[in-house]
Image (cartoon, rainbow, N blue to C red):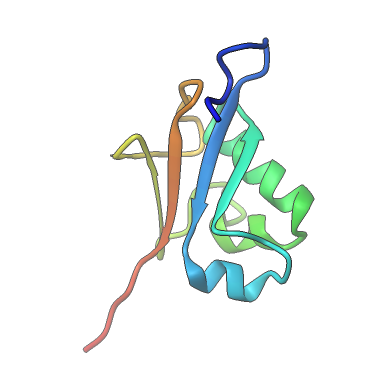
Length: 97
């Protein structure tokens, strides 16, 4: 299904890593929603799965250091605008030593 091209709705797709899905029962790896910015997208994810927003952003507010958000392949900040129909990937950074 093509999203967002037949209505005034600003539909996007958020893609969550498996670890996020595991932390929030009922969530899915692919989430369709309406959002115009990364901040709005996080608010919607938090509305659907309370606490998810705190996993993605901190109290400054900013995206947490260990999280990466990419809009159409470009690293994003909270105020990054999301084009209609875009895919947004939310990825947990992996580190080790």
